[in-house]
Amino acid sequence: MQQDLDGYIDRYNEILDRRQQLFAQEVLPFWQQATFRILQELKKLHAELVDAQRVPITQDPIDPAKYRNMQREIDRLTILAQQMVALAQADMPEKMRRNLAYTYADSYYFHAWGLEQATQLAINVPQLNAAGVMGVLANPWLPDGNTYSDRIRANTAYLADKMRAGIADAVNMGWDWNKTARHIEDIAGEGYLNSVRLARTEINRAASQASSHIFMQNADILDGKRWNATLDARTAPKDAANDRKVYDLAYDTAEMPGRPGERIPNHPNCRCKYSPVVSGVKDRVRERIARGAGDTPSEFGERTYVKVADYREYAKQRGIDLDERLRNDDPGRYLNNQERRGLPQPTF
Image 1 (spheres, rainbow, N blue to C red):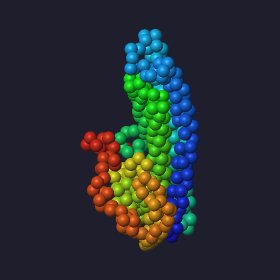
Image 2: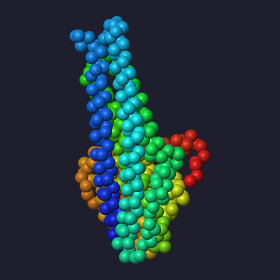
Image 3: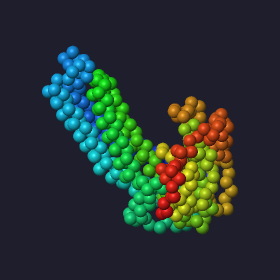
Image 4: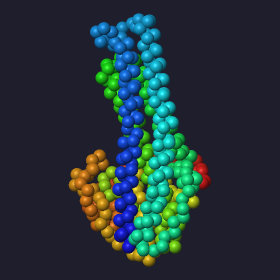
């Protein structure tokens, strides 16, 4: 029964991975369009930055008229970058809100169905409502007071600052066109990757909160929930150390906030999940999805199955020194801003 239930959890992980990939595909055209428009304006600006021999004009005294034209282009490009950021701030939160609300409801009912199928018992499934779902999502996954909308705004504001700095560097240092274009493309690419990372983290949080709440509704047949880390070389040390630990059903929710280093998501891009522990069923070692040959912190290896009790046993098989990784791990990656400053945590 427990093995069947864990199988449903694995199946939902695959569904969640596909949804995260679809979101990345959905927002990619925006960043591609933003990069194209900014590069088009940069071409005009670059024409003002070089003389007829394509020599950067910053090496010679700049003609006042040319300088005025160049300054107008710089101002226009800065405004364009700001407009792109404003569009991102207006569009991304709505896309994120829809995805998170759907993920929460989908995870809630999927885990209820999986629990029913595995136990063959009647499951308590209170009907969700929109207000309740959005109320859960409004609570930050790290208790620093920032919602997913706050994080999107912070990300895009950071992008705008980097764009302005990139423009200034191109002008002041007389970069050639190729170097300037590559730099701006890198900045836009960073904005896209940050958006995808944020989406992956928040989607995982929505799914985790939903599963925890359906587990809480069925506390009469469950003894707790078990931490499940991903078995590969990319797994964060704390996540690996938490693997197969059992927690209270209400732990890591608004009712019982999780501890630093022991909450899902545990850090940006966290892939950990909770699975329910059925009352009266002895936990047995089962085969789990893992990565094998060729797997490194930067490259995914072959997909395989291993029969291990927890990540530590998997690490021994793979030759991964988990204790060494834990000693070298940065504890700050699992803290929010208030925890880093030692401030009192807000209550929910």
